Image (cartoon, one colour):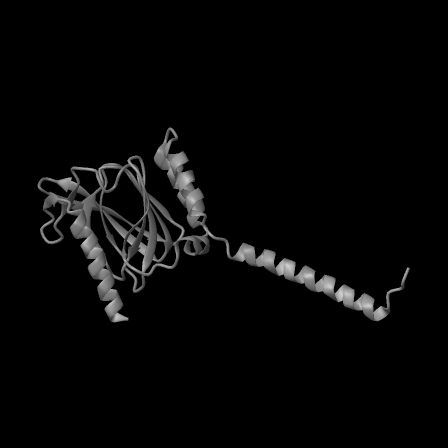
Length: 217
């Protein structure tokens, strides 16, 4: 059997150390660059939506998810264009990646289904309203920051503002088909009078806000 020289032994040891260091670095990097598995996320939400208290179960999934905003950003991408970006859409559940342009405002509106909001970057300020005769009046507010989850009941009326000068990203989950439900209303921002919700016009507001933001860069 041949002998190993001191130089050969040290070279081999150095190789082992280098391999171990690279392996540790990769493992550490994998932890630091965790990425939301969107498919599994949707599966978790669908399973939660089948529970006896679906909104509470969905909120738990959302809270767990946005507790790591960096992973959500890695999975969904950095917000780039304001809009209602569909992640999942079915008769039982709609999941949107809602990106708000800076200082954007969406007038009071309802959903006719429960909705839960989870912020993964930026801020979203909600004003809560209730009907008072032919108009609505403000009854409360909730300012949402990164990692926070906010549940709206089926009869909620709210308006939304992005109060900061950068894009806000939020996951909105609805307990039904967001795009097909009938009977929704919105309230004029000047008169607070009720009218039928025009979803197409709402999507246009996102597009216009996005274009203004892009032109200001």
